[in-house]
Image (cartoon, rainbow, N blue to C red; front, top):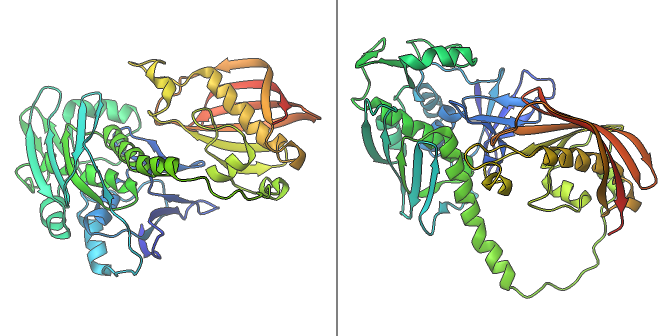
Length: 423
């Protein structure tokens, strides 16, 4: 792993140097692909696991722009803390930049409850974190509160190591996790005993490491945060959900202000040349997708397009817990409806149909769906990959084969036929 400087406004981003395209993944909430035991970022097929300790080191040291190069899917774990990453930053030094990054300031309390985790943030003039950690049996309950500064980060948090309970190890190994885990990089709790190669670095090291994880996940806001975070048994899932709630709340005043502004002078908008936009080798971000598809939230099922080759296209839909259908499908066991996966296939295929300028702005109506198979449930946090092949495109009628997958495993597939209808 190599830390490199980045220009003002670049943010924190990762680069996979071992992959042919050397893809870069921004440390942003929209790129969270999984939160099982760690935070995983993803873009296209590229993944980087366990980013929270590295991000926490940058956040704790006040660094907002950096490029992190990795020759694999996970940063070196070292001793299970953020100490070595912090030393790397200290050794390189921190350079002030001219551009000002507006901090995130919450105007009112925001709370999140996910499973056994509860988090809330209250207005405060600095970033303060008060955290309680414990296992399900209430063992090793610890509390710690700290205001985050580079000094408190270095002395009070950076050295806290990751930990797990002995009875969890078998399940973690069975699920392909902690493959490099050992007492060299983790503390193991067995009953009342603490197994470690050295004495605990803090008397309350467990809760301090929970704060390290939380600081790392808060980096996904993309800007410094001011507020008092109260966390009870935090988890990466709850941490990332708090980040999304904060971002949603901060965007609300802007939308309200725009609602009361007088309409701008009407200008004749030139429609983008879709042949140039949707061409072989192109990738599309959400703004470009919305220039092509007429769908809008909450029914836009394509977040970005990562690959276009002839009549084939690969797109991504990031499935978050904020999707409105999860309120009823199902509250205690949220699953993405299979029909919406069909809709995602149709929309992805529609992009290929709508690449023709004369079809711009039209809507793809379903006519039929055949050979439909749902193989696995899609849950919040998944990055749904949609691979489609347009097999027919005559006039207004389109037909496509589509496969939806999560982490390389097929979750659904179908052949869909649709008709383009005018604006």
